[in-house]
Length: 477
Image (tube, rainbow, N blue to C red; front, side, top):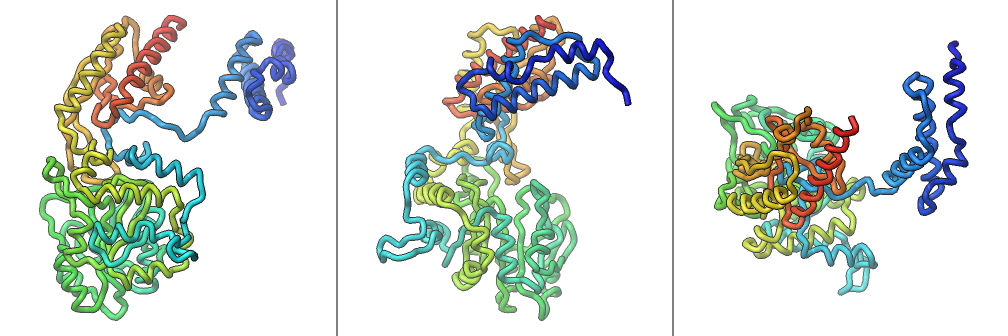
């Protein structure tokens, strides 16, 4: 066993005592947080000294400053707002869809007061939490019944567990998708107890493939919308209308996992046509499930709509209690759905739809505002407006390219030293609020399509702060 040398031991003796370091910490920090931060600072110093990486103990004021900064970091909320300058509208890592501002007062009221979550005010007795959204979902989609669970993966799980447990669900091989977080349709089917019956080939599936697979053990026909990828070239798939005719001739339900799901056709805005929930039901699907926080532009939820007798069976499944949504999700979803009663209003009022349909010239106008404000700071960075492409995100419309405009930052153009773009990106990411950008061709790219008007001043200040810190770091080095 190796023992510390005398010189190392002498350095270790110079470490301040815990109680002395604690006494110097700001008084407004809770004791346990101060204690944890001070302990980490001292343990880090001790490790560096023993590794021969430190010959002198930093001054006490530096140690206190480092410990206080660490403590304040721990006091800050872990989940906090960021500025999305990536151009990805439904950004899963950044919380997917933004909620409309007009529903915020309702959310605040429901969060801070008791509510009629499961209380029927008309009858004066216990009610169902699903009643708050079931009626409007039926109204908007034309479905006979509706149910909402906590996400679309849960919707797929409970639907299959209810209708196909121990029996076969017939699905095209080309629709056995995997989406983010390693969510695979075959895995969910296995968990539900349904037996997967693959038909067709990866790129081509015919109606006769489904027909040939139907037998005594068949519980339902299932269709999965290819929302996060596309197969092009020599392809063939079977429409909902064709499958519906086949399913009904065998007295089987047809279920489509629509994935992203949307209630408004955006093709008039240059967005590729995605089948709406209404169209899918009208084409003959008996059940349709989709996400609440993707193209719908609402909170995370899994929405199931369709035939009343099938939805009622799913509602009675004991698994439903484990997958149910809370009062805030219900309040947010009801608020968003109410906006859809006026589709033209929805396109402007729901942030996801607004960002997807904003004309490029309007995005360029915002880029010009940001560029002028950044130039007014006279920072030593290259700045220009560039054409770029935004993405829908959230696994929706993978081939859709939305023309957009961005402001690019190029630190290396003005600094004589090596100014790493990745270091500047990190500084922006660690800003308060964090500014999330793209890096392309040794430049920082800030796509204005996903930047809200009130976030432009935040970006300006964030860039100023990041560049000042960057320059200070270069000077100190």
